[in-house]
Length: 139
Ligand SMILES: [Cu+2]
Image 1 (cartoon, protein in one colour):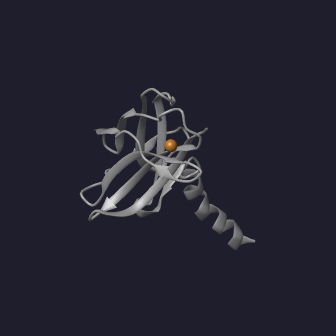
Image 2 (tube, rainbow, N blue to C red):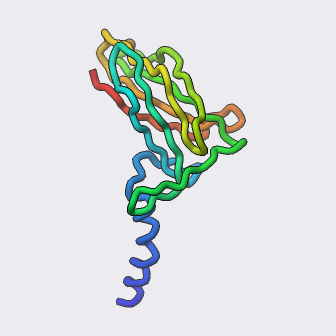
Image 3 (cartoon, protein in one colour):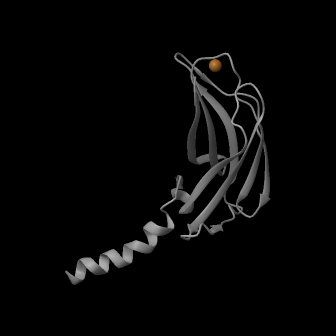
């Protein structure tokens, strides 16, 4: 009884910190989150913010982290169609604060049937160390 109570106490801070972990980034032992600033739209530019953080308190305070020298961030759109997949126009990526990136000119082209995804990768020595896939449209 006492033992299970202790386990509960030990686990609680972790589950609370990561309760709102939309996207897990195990390599950083962190969470990521994508917020749409404008859009998402099909056929016109959308804008989003991508953030990396380690903890989130109950009142929504986040501890943003630096990706550091170790990782390069890459963001791109990707479409999965029935018989092939392909990318699209490049996203304009810029860091706006510690752990926070602005994704500008995200373009999900219209006129196709398939899934439009937003993907980000962490590159380490030019190799993909992490990839997250966010399905944005199912057309
Ligand atoms: Cu297509």
